[in-house]
Each structure stands twice: as C-alpha cells, then as structure tokens.
Length: 434
Image (cartoon, rainbow, N blue to C red; front, side, top):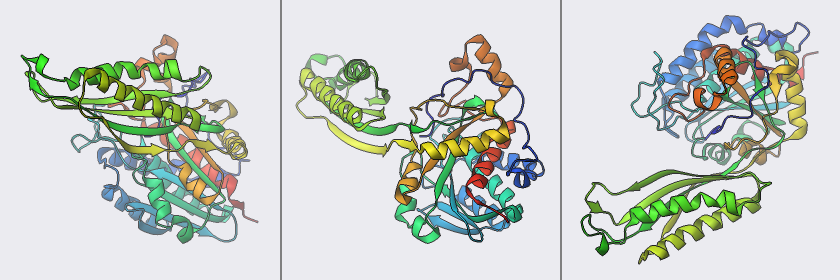
C-alpha cells in the first residue's frame, strides 16, 4: 500500500535538517546517541533498499532485524505472523507501547539509478518500508542505551505483508497481543514525499479504506481479420474502464472523498487474435461504509452492464484481492504525540496533511488491542529539491511519490527525522524514571 498520494504541501518547507533535541526535552537522553548511530543506520537503510523482498517472503530482512535487535539487548521472537519479528525491551513497571514498522517490498522495476538500487530484478522498495525498518531499529538502539531515563515495555512489531493488507492480521492471529502484552498505545510512521525534517499527522479518518478487485470479462475469440464473428473482450474492457471513470464524479456525493483506479488491464497475446477474455484489476478507496458500498455496487453494475451490451454469453467474475479498513487516528493520541514531537523538531515542522487516500493496515493492531493509534507521515525528500519544485509549481511532476519506480528517500536527513519522531513519541507514552 502504503502512501499512494502526496499529502497537502507544507507552506514553508525548510531546506535545513530538523533541529536537534532541546536539552530540556524528555527525549534528549535517548536522542543524544543518534549522531553516533547514524553511519550504521544509513548503511542499514542502503542495504535493505538493495535487497527487497515480497510479502511473506521477507526472510533476509527478518534475519537482519533479529540480528540487530538481539545485539541491542532486545528479547527477539521471529516467525510471528509467518515472517514477522517482535522485539521487546522490558524495563520495569510502566506502560506498554507498541511500535510498528512494515518491511515488504513491491513488484516494481527500480529506475532510481542509485548505487544501492535493488539487486533483485523486478522488485523494489518503492514504498519506503526499508526506511521504516531502519528507523524502528534506530529507536530500539537508542532506547536500549537510555534505559535509565524511562520505564515500561516497548514491543517493536516488524510486520510483513502490509502491501497486500494481510500482515497485521497475521500477527494478530498468531497471538502477538497474548504473547507480548496488550499495548496502551500503537504508534507508527510512514515515509512520504515531503521535505525531510517534516512530520505530518491527521486526527480521525487519516488513511482510506481500500478494496482491490480482479474482474474477468468473457467474450468470444476469433481471428483478428473477422471481428464480426467475435465478442471482443478487449473492446468490452476498454469501454468498462472509461465508464468506471464516472463512478466518483457522478455517483459519490461532492462532499465525500473517493478514488477508483484501474491499475491493470490484460487481454490477448498477439495482434491478430481476438482473445476470449480480459482481466481488469482495480482499487476502490473510501472513508465511509456508505461510500464504500455505493462504489462497490456501481463497479459491479457497470461491469455487468458493459458485458450485456457487448453480447457476452457468460457473466463477468469478481474476485476480492485484498482489503484495508479505514485507519482512524485517535484524536487525543494525535494531540499528545504531535505535541511531544513538535517540542523536539519544532512546531513549524509538524503539519496536518488532511486525509490521505493511501491505505494502511496498522489500525488492525490497535483495534485488536482496543488501544488508541497514532500513525503519522515523515518527510523523505531532500528539502532543497522539494523547495525548488514547490517554487516552480512542479511538485507533482518532479517529486516521486510512493510506489513510483523513482521513489527513494534520501538517507539524510530522513533517518534523523524518522528516528527522532519515533523515539520521541515512544518516550512520551512510556513512564519516566524516578
């Protein structure tokens, strides 16, 4: 999944790195070790970026997490939710805080040209999950070294298979809450095409629900020279794609937000054969159950209608591929967490991006635990590059977003931003040492 659209642009992105933690900040004892850890963390990020793995196949990544988290002094359990890893820092009586990072990649051919670009053909960390793992490991390293400053229990959930919406549920089904403790809060973050140094969080419905569908439309094959003997599924599918573009504009109320995207259309093998069938893959994004149901019904009606108009003898088939619930950030948790982060990175560096039409399954962990969730974005773009694009009015064109073959967060100051935000948030919810 992850973040599929850039959030609202910040008004005054800074070209400088985020400021260091104030000596008066409660995060300072832990963040004091960040500068020394940066070389190791940047190298880790580049290594993970070069070795992407698909959902539930993240064996190398999991092994690297186990090795490092164990070295930091965590109690580490691999194989939670198939390929997930849970690392625990138990530091006496106090709150339990669950920190989550996902680590699967995408079937995307990388076009960044980076020296640490993907070494696995056809796969890429195009959504930034490599950065998420790096920042959570960095936070564990800092918290472990600063045990004297906090009390409680940190449960770090390194989650597989976020991109297909199955990883969080797999960890819940495997007993993450029973085995490692029910958290008082669930915290997490996602790198986004914002200037590094910025943090963005929206209270309430923050990330959209998603329904991904496979639709097969059946025609009648024939020779390309005799289309009159066919029921052409290519034309049928093309007409369907165009008609589906009216769902949001004509069937969703203007005050609601929704997205419908046909991401794949496959039909035929050569130019002179009309095939028997065509396959569409599409995603529906929404924030309310009413809009979600309305869009699902409209998609089915249009697909069946186009098949009937074309004279198809067989009904289309619909298959649900994956689904994400709406991620609803707890308002009180957002206010508390963002105030803490803002006190460290600077209030001007924290913005409300509004609802994001990308989707996330981290909320499943919070729902299962009956705990509040706060999930935010942090910038991964070089601030100077972003500022130049914003001044030219070319952010959408020049700043690659998540799932683009050119998406690659700059190592710094992105790692600093992510580790600072996550460590600060964790300390805000953990107990203070007497």
